[in-house]
Amino acid sequence: MEEAITNSTILIFLAKIRKLWLLNVYKIFTTPKVIEEVTEGKNISDMEKKDLQEFIEKRIQIESPEKIILNKGIGESSAISLCVEKKIKIFLSDDKQARKTAELLSLLPVGSLGIIIKNLEMKIISKEEAKKYLDLLIINSYYISIDLYRRVLDSIEKFN
Image (cartoon, rainbow, N blue to C red; front, side, top):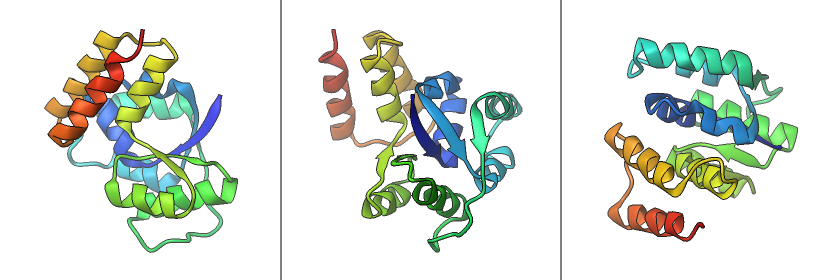
């Protein structure tokens, strides 16, 4: 199982659609700062917080990086720093700026859409479920352009 480090955006969006289990394709690490952002978030319902806390307790290893290498958001900086420190290449994030920073550091950013596609590739979910989860993300304030939406749908359709 591949290792990945997540920031708060992935956890929040997947909690909003009640699909945190999609992350089970990775062994996940994160930092106390990311957990703090997730559990103290103002745009998260009590049910989402409960789901997040249960998922975090069961599936996420929490570690602090020895050194913060960036001057960005606290959660993103700590997560990216932990990636570099632990030499884990996969950085889970839906934050555009954090993803760009990760790329500059030779990390592989993967967002919620990539996680859905990975589950589809591994035959954990069907094409219909992948489309449903994509639409659920959008209904829950996940922004993607029309062009990206079409490309993701085309990508989903290519699977058998």
